[in-house]
Length: 491
Length: 95
Image 1 (tube, each protein chain N blue to C red):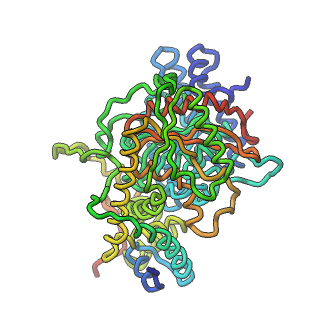
Image 2: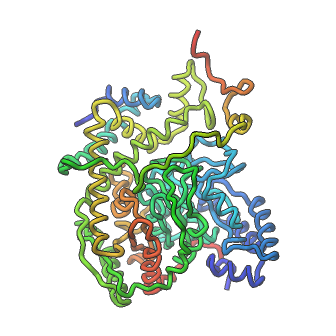
Image 3: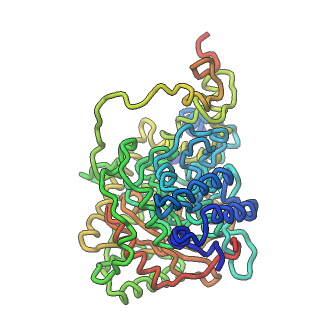
């Protein structure tokens, strides 16, 4: 068995039993990053020396008995989390020179738990994208290949660097953020498990803002248990985030063995979209059978406003983004392009600093918030958002969790789905509704497509009931017994 | 509803993003495709529905109005593209 076969839970056990040291583990991962990152481009910035220093400190903690299950575990940090003294770019050229003088709450909690940071993972620029091709630092290669083909595939997005790093085993686990599917869709595309917690469960403080009413940090890892271990450390109330939930954080690992016996699982009719890939539908049916076989009761439900999720999202998210990204003005931090006067400086800085997708979304957001259009677009979208929330509230009066596919297809090729922005947006059709409602949702690897690519199923739960999401996801994981590995990986 | 080139320029001005003629025409097509797609919200009856502005199912917290932080000018200015003493520097605004 190779050191790279260890899960987070397995590594924690091996570290505790002193079968390996944190320095050995980090040294192996640093070498794997050095070998494979030039090809995969999963990291924008690597921090091997910082990692080694943290590993030494981890060994000291393991020796003195103050270790947590994450002490000495080498992870990738999505480059959207501000990390003190380590460049944070949000994959945008406009933040190229930015070195945060502070640490985000979530990355700080992981640091405190003793996790080792290997580097800052690549993403779509400002987390806007579903393929990682909008990064200002180059696209990321998915370590998975279609059978008999060498074509480069996308890892999904926006947390595509995190996904590629964990799948290729150049990180043991990673942080992501999810605004409309940015943890779940890349997890599905790379054969990983990833959870978007309930909105408010993990602090947004120090996370570069995209759409503040939707953004939510969460973990990505090789299995469901590892996600629970990470979320235990990442979650919790933070007075620095005004939308942080003042709630107890349960031990999520305790929910893993609950089973699904007697649970009511909802199957929403509206997710059976016309034209959906039959492979995806067949996998969904399999998931239903697995849960039924383990004692769950399957109930047909309706989420009538599902089809309006994407149009609502593509008004609300750009509106919030246009406001959040107004701060990049070339004055206080980040890139500046000089101009004749102050307005000229702003316009040139933002023209050069932002990529095409970010500009598009800022423009759409500016338009829907502008005088005369606010009611027709933004207010209308917020009202439909309320109906989408009501869909879920009504459904959860009858069921404990909902099962759907994660994405409408497996990973696609670099350069595909580029015809127009709307085609790309359709990737998020199954993930966006849970984001709009703020409920927790997890993607679990459940099978392979005919050409050998991973496919995921999504488990959606009630507000702050990640425990049931973990229980159902663990049941699917057990039944699916997903053991396939990507072609490109550390061995 | 379809955006014309003048409207695209006006939005770019509001968003403080410099655009050239070629970009205006690309953006015009792309923005119209997106607006065309979201048009379907027109079918939904929202009479009597309150707008949902936040993801959190709760009222925003309030805190006591007191000093919690400060005295870190160096940290705040550390990333400034240009500074003069303890100030951010920009091109002359008033002649």
